[in-house]
Image (cartoon, rainbow, N blue to C red; front, side):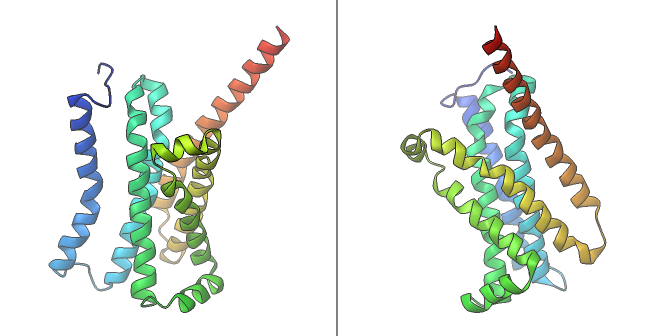
Length: 211
């Protein structure tokens, strides 16, 4: 595909299509709720579904940079912010389901549950770390924070690791590790590619300094 510009018609079509695809899991929840097809445990269905899509979209967001380098589609970077915000959207729904259906907006009871149950504490901490990334996702904040913006958004690496730990913890009782293993493998490859890039850049800088 030829190079696309963010203001081109082709790019806008791709972005709109991706936006609609990212909305589908949420629309599915709405339809299933209306048709009363959330199963015997609606809370578990909603919680699991929103949690799954948070991890999926975090992995997709992290895949943008290595994919761009691999196939040379630089315009993919312009989609990263939208995908990251969608991951935050589903994380917010995940947290809202916990606060609403588990605790009926009783913040004190919710915080007690967070302290008492380690896997919930991990999920809560992950969501808290996502908040500043979502709040600083605008171009205005990028300009305001300058170089600090990139440093702040490197939290995404810690967030994906913490999110996967929370994910494993939630699945531990089900004794079904196929999905966690698959997603952990993807995250390992995505994070590993960044470590390799960092190592190569470091060695190149050393070589340039010596020469």
